[in-house]
Image 1 (tube, rainbow, N blue to C red):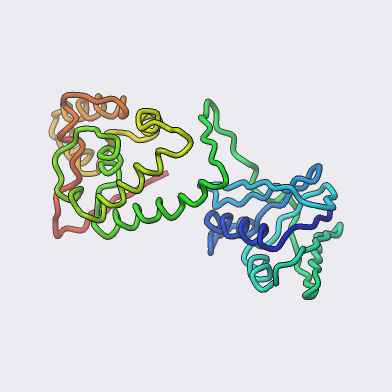
Image 2: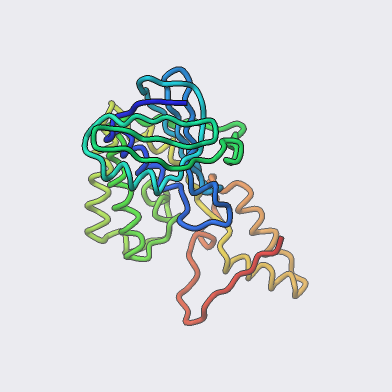
Length: 268
């Protein structure tokens, strides 16, 4: 297996893949990225077993094959390289030689068979993102940062962006949120997209209601006291979480602030 690739292209790819690579894991192989070459197309995949990122690009002098390469080590090497073409060659035992005008490096890879197989999602929907739209990462991070700093409810924030009626929350009058929303609305105008089309897509992916811990606790406590109505009502609401219902309001509110630290347990 061998291939050649521009330093900047590889660096950008590795930086994106690092977002799906755990810093620590009981499964060492997932600290690597799986490199697959077929017909001068390089596909690189990383996963933390919860999310997976797969990036493909055209390369030169490709020789079909596959190998798992430690991502952090390769990222460190690539970052130190000048803007040159990097030449990779992989031996039968997984020894990886990286050569360029700036020097030569050798690292050990792992067999592709050890890397987790890619999970296939049945009845999935595809979202296609153009290269220029990768700049949207900054817009996304800005929103998530604002939500974290202002302790905004995740579900209700997206309901608000979808113009869904939720209980009034003064937090969305915050100047930071108003400014972000304006940038987002301007972004929606690219490629002749309509707000209606964007909202339709959002409503397919963002539930209006979720089974909040405090409502589940209320229902279970009532059931322990021989009252199953709260359980039935909760199940009725979350059965179709993407549909608006008359009784939905009380299930959209986050848990009230309390000095008590909430603990939840999961058994398998």
